[in-house]
Amino acid sequence: MSGREKIKCVVDTDAGTDDAQAIAMLLASPRVDVLGFTTVHGNTNTKQVCVNLLKLLRVLNREDIPIFLGAETSLLGDVKESGDFHGTDGLGDMKDIEPVDITKIRTETATEALSRISKENEGDLTLIAIGPLTNVATAIRRDSGFGSRLKQCYIMGGNYYGKGNSKNICAEFNFFCDPEAANIVLNQLSCPITLVGMEVCFDNPFTWDMHKSLRGIDTNTGRFFKLMEQDIIRKWPSYIPCDEYAVGALLNPKGIIRNSKEVFASVELKGEHTRGQMVIDWYEVLHKKPNVTIVTESSSEALCEMIKTAMEEKSII
Ligand SMILES: [Ca+2]
Image 1 (cartoon, protein in one colour):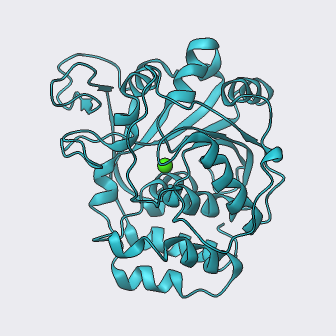
Image 2 (cartoon, protein in one colour; image 1 turned 180 degrees about the vertical axis):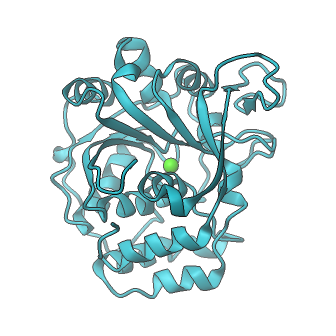
Image 3 (cartoon, helix red, strand yellow; image 1 turned 90 degrees about the horizontal axis):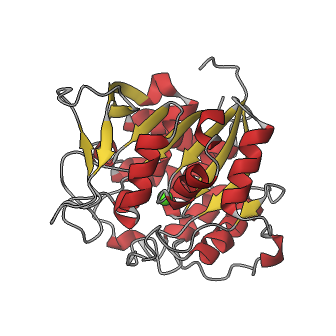
């Protein structure tokens, strides 16, 4: 992607403290035009995701961007326990925050909005999926042309070391929340997919000094994120950005992506212990065309600089 090209995008999110920071990065870039947010279960329930977004967009002065309510359960109808890693509300249980106006949430559903916006911006829309993939899979199933109208899709999700997170043995949280949806998206979304999996995030944590450099920034945005982490940060053994790496890879591929590989990837649906784990055909045993570009090495320093710029309320060019 050229440096000057305008990026039109929709963000599918379960906001999420890392989603919030990734969105702050996106909105700090004058090259980006966010056409909407679609919400999904994951870090908290879907209605609370909308409330979290309203809080964030108010601080970022971007309440003009529409929010669409999406899937409240996985395709099979279950909801995974998200724990309190991001706080019980997914956004750090911030106190002393003015209530938000939930009537601003649009009546059009997330799936309808994804389909419509892809038609209005055929060939020119980037989908950024940073939560469980239920909305995206539903859009594919209801609208067979959806994927082929997208320019590209950036996903944070999946893993390949076989180490799980968030109370599951082998799967990454977003894929674990809706394995069928992740399987549908990887196998049926007919557009280029760039995937930031769990490994590239866990292998590139921020040092606590890097984190401190972000949270000392005294702007409205900086203070919001400091408050957001105030009650949850002590539970975190290390500081690991996740969704931020996916947005970083989109905005600054040369700085963020140190290495990547085109592979065929799918998602295990039946494993006794491995349900929800991404499976990569590293040795091309299946003779299938690669369906994702997976980011395998990244730069925490470059990402930290981008987040710092967003916290300072400056422009990420
Ligand atoms: Ca997320």
